Length: 283
Image (cartoon, rainbow, N blue to C red; front, top):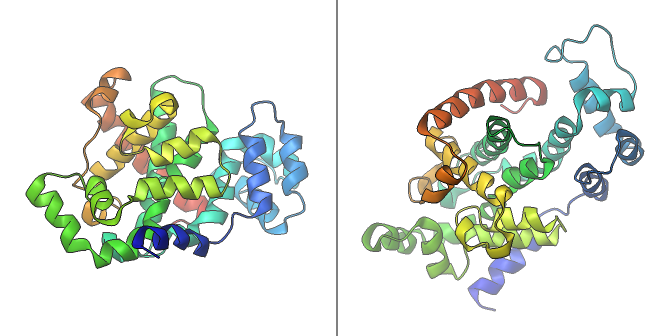
């Protein structure tokens, strides 16, 4: 078995996506779904129900009375907040691991992933676009491939870094040259394994190279790419590879964003991270 086959087989070591989470995310991503449709799926999971009610009754939302009904809590929180709770429960454990190949300490990849996800929401509002729950999911999972590829990058780091420094490769291109696959492509394979929608798979797979996504190139792919670039600017979870990526120069112009817009988005990110730390205990 060659190295690329070994890398792809390593995907099987990741825990499977719980069926209840997968079903709930499918309903949330379906524009025709109602709060009751989602409640019918998650109401029998005591852990999820308890956390939804806890978040709804937290000081962050400052409600005048206690909420004890899952349906009422979902109506008050909205699908996006529910999705954040579901994804937090499902992926924090995996994304919180250290990734030594990328020089990411415990929790660094998780915080970077959450930052990207929050930035997609901030960008969507700034661009005055309709919220798209798929964006948060794609952004949160965009670097999942690093979890699997980290060990292989660590073994070949000198060769990868040599291509970057001496021949001007981007880090992701150097990964592909040395290992036969890069973390974005591997992340796309993971998203396929977990049967996520095509748009989410494309956003994960092309989050460094949106210009290669072809017919899958959409605002969703572009916004995840921009959110990732912006998060790297903050230094949150950048790791050893954070300075060795190139952004798409046309996307800022296509979305009519200026440097001032980026600065304001990053300021809002700090506030949103603090809020999430308060009710999801992310820190």
